[in-house]
Length: 239
Image (tube, rainbow, N blue to C red; front, side, top):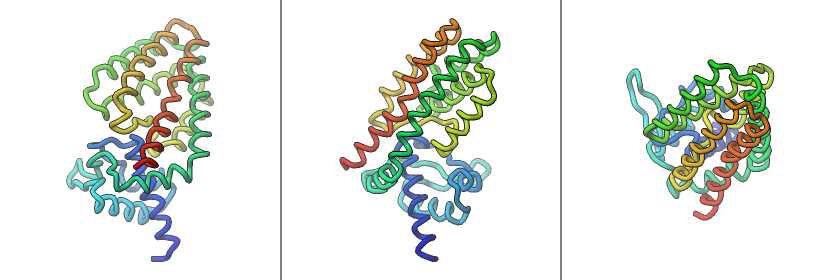
């Protein structure tokens, strides 16, 4: 294996460790199929497989067989992986900050349009997604419910061009769009309480047709992504 291939595997391994650290993949969740993961990461399946095998050997992932098998996250990122998380975050930090700021403005624009264009069916769906989030029993379930709520808001804007821009942005920002970052065990409880409150405020503003309020709330809400990244960065550097 050439040095270039080794280096690429190192980088993809760091990326996947960081995905666990920042809450793209929570403990107990299954990663995408190897083929899909390779496409999202922009590398070949051989490189992806080698990185996954490293994470299994390091105890971060476990392989399960059968129809519902695959690669599953075993635990929160351990202290031994702080260097990997630091390497990837420091290398990507300017781009991550740029993308996070862009995301706040994109979601603000979507929310403003949703407040103007939402239909009764959109309102029913957004309310149902709010209930799903409130009733979710685990972090992974709340993360999934959060994604579905944001998709419902995007759909309520009824603007395919802007909706596609938002979806493409999220595909570049996270490995599995539209999943939002969910932080680590230290930051997650407070974040989930804040998310629940802001979700309710955002949907109320959209339903009431208060477009400027909806945009402002959405922008502030999506700032959570950058705040979670900053928290994990501080934790990694301090370990």
